[in-house]
Image 1 (cartoon, rainbow, N blue to C red):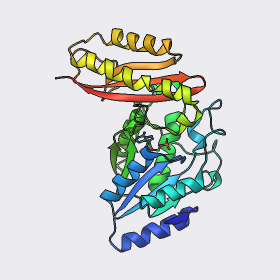
Image 2: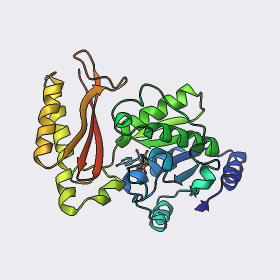
Image 3: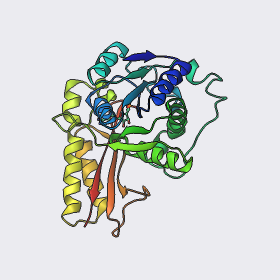
Image 4: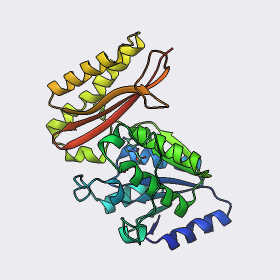
Amino acid sequence: MKVIDSISALRDTVNTWRRNGETVGFVPTMGNLHDGHLKLVKKAKAHNDKVVVSIFVNPMQFGANEDLDAYPRTIEEDKAKLISVGADAVFLPSVAEMYPAGLDAQTFVEVPGISDSHCGASRPGHFRGVATVVTKLFNMVQPDDAFFGEKDFQQLQVIRALARDLSMAVKVHGVPTERETSGLAMSSRNGYLTDAEKATASAIFAEMQRLKAGIESGNTNFVELENIMVSNLEAKGFKKDYCQVVNAATFEPASDSDKELVLLVAMFMGKTRLIDNMQITRD
Ligand code: AMP
């Protein structure tokens, strides 16, 4: 696996592959890799001749009071994991390589509408940071295919809109969420939790399943179902950021006539913010 830290070396590597007629898959990450990330890499390997994984903790997508400095950085372990799943190159740019003009002077990309609610409302500027860094990375790698987790459902929709609106050639793929056997969605932020908190955090998945079963059995009182879920989780020590059933396309609160829904959840366990979601189809 090639380890690359400059944009020019990345372009040289990708150009060489392209001249050989090889397709390129791309998986952007912030590192501290777990089996969810590796699932994306395996999907990319199955789909493309060559796979680039980026590891970059993007300061532009963190708010002032968020965990940018504390975010886990485990580069050596990450490289070993990427080799084990057959990644062809890992791109590890510095902040200066990514933002040579500094963050404040940086041109940015913003996807209207879908970026405004839920994580966008709780984390102002977050999706601007995500859309900007992903656009830059797409320009650097120029992949045929890019792979993102459904774990970050709103982010996936922001990136789909970005690629469509800016006429990008890349095909964006969503990959189902990888979970612990307890049901807890794998996340680099789970490392902030104690063992006891981690055990409690699996309740999010159990409650999502319960709510989904309620809708599938015909209950359309979405607000009541959400309230039950929140009070069950609050009883276990969570604090709500948001918990809402929405139209999967518009992210507007679900209505009786909607068929494709998604339950979007963000909960605090102490200082740790956990997000999860579940897609629900009504017939
Ligand atoms: P991150 O390193 O958290 O920025 O995530 C990098 C990519 O991995 C994003 O596309 C995430 O949605 C995806 N991802 C994170 N956790 C999971 C998971 N548990 N299952 C599947 N994909 C994931």
